[in-house]
Image (cartoon, rainbow, N blue to C red; front, side):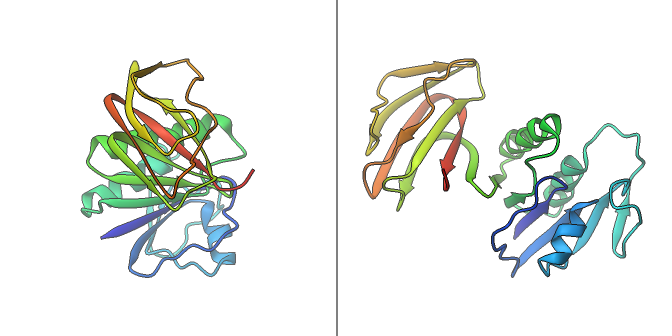
Length: 200
């Protein structure tokens, strides 16, 4: 089963394909989701942003230890969902954005493939062999989310990464370019977040 999490940040302006996917809407995200004609399977949160409790809602107290996004991730995890798309998680609150990015890390630790989608960029946690297809000419960036990230065996990238070590705090992995229809690299130690820039 595949799932979608809709967050109450900057609304996603593109098309969101919901067919065959379980959609969890977080609080105020229902406002922009409704405008796009999306009917969530369930809404979760404390609904302080929305201002009312919608139908088919799971209500949580305003003072809680989890964000609505983490509640949504937990919900989909319990349903056995292994592929998740996250929309609406950027903009407005940079602190919440940083927390929303951490949802990708938590998902990966649980064996869930999660991708964060904004109007400009798709990004997700990577480790091991990473293959890129159909992205020739696209800007990609790689940021470590472990103490150190070791990259080897890169193919089809403008700036080769072989025996490269990027540590947390380094900016070395930013703004590479895919030069071939099929490109790849391998993270032999650690893990990172791969950013695929769709609009500049």
